[in-house]
Length: 528
Image 1 (cartoon, helix red, strand yellow):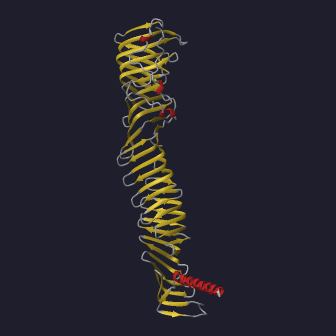
Image 2: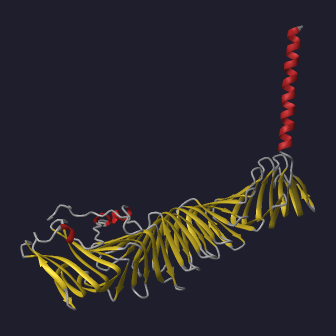
Image 3: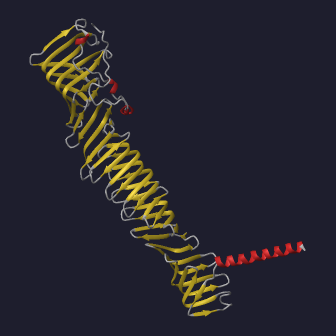
């Protein structure tokens, strides 16, 4: 009796599963409903199909279609529609048009062919064939498609349009045209609602002003805003920019570059490097910080390298550089000349460089220092350097145990072909000069003072001194001159701060305040 009862329960349970599964299947695969002006059935002509003619309407769940005629396979829950065009509405958001459509109620797909258009919001997608998956709300094409969304036009061989998220995945021979740029790449993601491109492969962008390459990031076509990442390259008529990341607002003409930024201008002959660079095109200036470096490229490949905490470059309306300012911990290096200070300004139009706050310049063996130093570049070969107040020129002799020194209120040096030629000293001129023979043996020490003097140089070394206006001086033998008289007042030897290589631009900045620097003096017990 118990065994019989178990068998009955098992049979009932199996029947329950069969019934519920059929009900579930029926609910998930609702039948297509149809109506038309005329219904025909010819088993010989269309086996298993009804032929619907005139003002055909078919409806399935939240989808409704309209066509001129259709072949309806009721048992398979399948319909082939024909029309000029066939029109299918999916809910209240997606419209599908084509000359022919295959609609499956069981698979919940609509496949359209010939002059197909898919409309969703402001987007119109055109292709020879489109399949729309009603379960997942995605339309896709595999044979080439063009989308128009407001001002943007997109094309790809393969595309998937996810209507719930307003996202379009495009692959294979992709291009996009906006009001500002023409883009081409292998793949990209586009949001139709935000009108935003998301870069997922190496992309080439072309506008009237520039050409850009990027590997990732995004671009708002409507607002002309972009954040580009991954080996970004930008080219215009004369400049090239590379960076790890770039943000650009085309309306404000404002951009930021992050990490490994390099801007080079082949026409103007400069290169700007840094890990953070801002460019305000409308404001007419750029700012570079974080390991920045400005390179002024010389035709003879003897370039000048400059570093500071902050670099600021001012441009005119044609984007021509007019002024350059460097702030804090300034150092520059060129093979024949090096310098340090805390602030520097360069007026491009006037070819004038001004160094402020403890400036020091080295040319060959000569160290030049003053309260302010200016460089006036008459041309590529002739430069006038002027030292203003507390002016001092020092060069070492005998392995930096002794020093030639020139001091005055104002000193003017003339440089020709990168060689110091002549120096004029004005007001309170003083000098200490070690006279040597051809074998560099010491003959005597000239200690002199006058109102003005002229120093002649050969190969960046003192070759002769001319004194004016009744000089007061004497030539001492080595033993006659005590150590305290061998250095003029305010002597400083600042070789510690001299950049000997480009890499040394980033170390040992000179203090802003004079007197706080590290100065190496000769031994105090020399020639007492």
